[in-house]
Length: 159
Ligand code: ADP
Image (cartoon, rainbow, N blue to C red; front, side, top):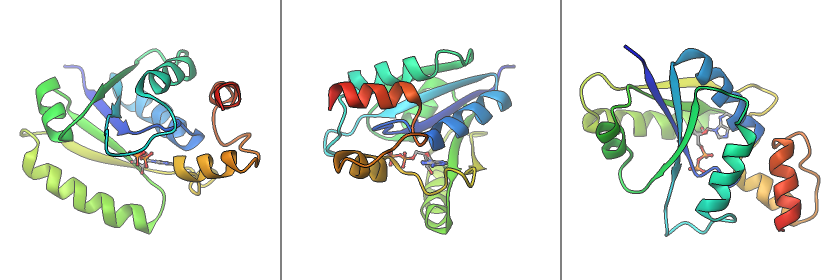
């Protein structure tokens, strides 16, 4: 049976830290879906359509990766779509504290057999978050090497 994995985030925008986790998870599982979290309460730099377009462009060389989006409870989306694994990235102790709580809460909501699996961030990228990328970019600093080139070009074109 194929193992279906899900990696969620706002991807506002996708960073090289996310991309590293995506490439590694795509090697581990038969199918990996990127679930863009749609949260109207959270102010985003890019619209859902822009984020979808950027992700599809940046990930087109990885065969077993798909892009989807959802709103509401992650556990509902996981259960309704038959995912087996939810992949998360861990950058530091702060991530660990938050992620442990979320994984334990989700475990009470997931259908039987769904596991949250953690991949440790590559130290090259462990200081990167979408928020810090946006902050530096908006203040005119260089984010080259921290986001995929296609994303950087998209950001420059649409800024
Ligand atoms: P959101 O935008 O919804 O807050 P994040 O981008 O913070 O989502 O996180 C989505 C997932 O990616 C989380 O598991 C997070 O720990 C992981 N992640 C984010 N940035 C990195 C990075 N630089 N390296 C590895 N994992 C990361």
